[in-house]
Length: 229
Length: 284
Image 1: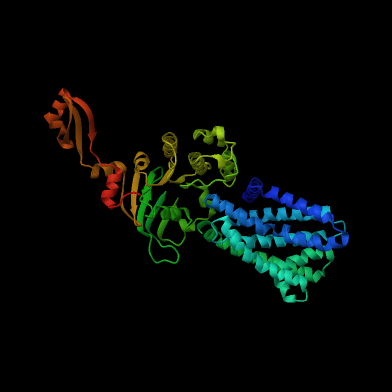
Image 2: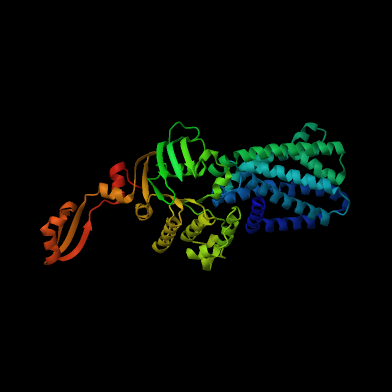
C-alpha cells in the first residue's frame, strides 16, 4: 500500500534529519525533571507538559519537515509520482501523532506514579497532535525557507497560546473553551484530574469536526501552496 | 502519444497569455525537442502536460485521454526529470531510489543495474548531500525511469554534466527511444537537440513558429554549398561550390586530385543559426 510506504518514508526522513534524536533528548529531560517533583504537583505539571510539548510536536515539526522537503525540491518530485496529496498528508499526520503519543505516554509512565485515564489521554494527544499538524501545514503556506516559517509561525502560535493561558488563569471564561487548543488541553488535563463524560464527548466531537475541516482545507490547497507556491 | 491543440494559458491573476495557442503532436517512440530561450514558455507547457498547472485552454491529449480527465494513475505512465536535482539529501542514493520506487505499481527490481549504468555504483550507499551536481543529476535522471514509464519528460538532462557523463545520459536516452519510449526533451542546448531529437519545436514568447526535424531544418535553411580548404604552397586557400554543381564541376575534381586538402565541409546552418534566423532571438 502506498500510504504505508509514504509513512515509512516519512519516518525514515524524520529519523535521518535528526528529529527523533532531538525529541528523545527532550523527552528524557522532561522525564527526569518531572520525576523529581512531589506527587501533588505532578498531576498538574504532567498534563501541561504533555499538552504543550508532545501535542505541539505536530506544529513545530511539520513546518520543519515541509520546509526541508520544499527546500530540497522533494515536493516537486513527489507530485509527479502516483502518491496522492491525501496519502502524503495522512502519512505526515500519522507519523507525527505516533511520535506525540510515544513521547506523551513515555513521560506519563515513567514520571507519573498515580492512576490516569489512558484512553482519554490517548484521544487527547491524538486529536491535539492532528490539529496542530494541520494548523502547522496552513502556517507553511507561502513560505519558501525555514526562516520564513519560523517568523510566520509566531503569530500562529500566539493566537492559540494566549487564550489557553488566559483560560488556565480564569477557567470561568467559558467562551475560551471554543479555542481548539483549550479543548485539547481540557481533554489531556481531564485524563489526569477527571472530566465529566458529556464534556469530554463534546470536546472530542468538536476537535474531530475541526480536524476534518482543516484536513479538507489543507488537501485542497496542497497543490497550489506547497508545490507551485 | 501526445497531441496539443490550441493550447493557451495565463497565470492566475493575470490576463496576459504566456502560451498563445500552440499546436504540436508527438508520435510514440519519438524524441521531441522543445527549444527556446528562458521565459519562452517551455517549462509552463511542460507543467501543463504533466498536470502541475491547471486551467488551460485548448486541448492536451496524453496517452489517449485529455489531461484534465486523468487521475493520479497518470503518473504511473510518465517519468519526469526536472532541470535541478530534487533528492532527499540525508538519504543515500539507493534509499532515494527505493523510496520513490515504492510509490509505483511497477517496482524496479534492478535498481543497482541502473545505478551502475550512470557510474554511481561505488557511491550508492553514500548520502546524497555529499554528491556533486553532476552525480545528483545522474541520480535524478535514473529516478525518472525507475518504473519503466512510456512517456518521459527530461528538462535539460545534461545540465551540469561533464562530456563523458553527458554522453552516458544521451546514450541512455537513445536506448529508451529504441525501447519504444516517447521522450519530451526541454532544452536550450542546441547540440543536445541536434544529436537526439527526431523533431524540434522552437518556442518564443508563447508561440511555436517552427516544428521540423533538425536535419530538414538544416537543409532548408543552410546555404547548400560545399567549402574546400586546401594548401597552396605555404598558403591555405578556400573555395566554395554549390551542391548541385559538384558532379559537373571540373574545378572540384582538379582540387581533389592535385592539392593537399585541409578540410571539406558542407555548409548547412547550425540549429542555433536557424533558431536566430527564424525567431530573431538568441538562446539565453
